[in-house]
Amino acid sequence: MDNGWDVYILECSDGSFYTGITRDIVKRLAAHKAGKGSKYVASRLPFQLVYKEEAKSKSAALKR
Image 1 (spheres, rainbow, N blue to C red):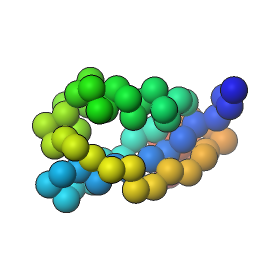
Image 2 (cartoon, one colour):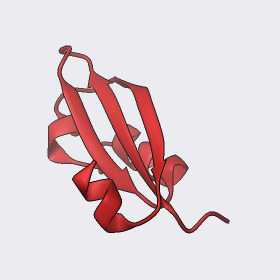
Image 3 (cartoon, helix red, strand yellow):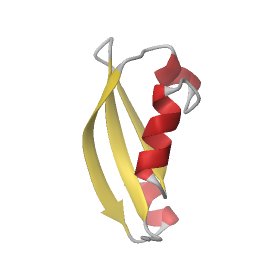
């Protein structure tokens, strides 16, 4: 189990982008797909993961 943070970018169905951070990307993407990850993404389903990178800390992820 990786205890680091991931920064990710989703491209929504309307062509807009959503950026987030998480400790568990699989669980977070499942929440987005179920319409429970964020109101922004839920109103623009479906989406595609277009970018992901690892960060060493929450602070580093938020700054990125």
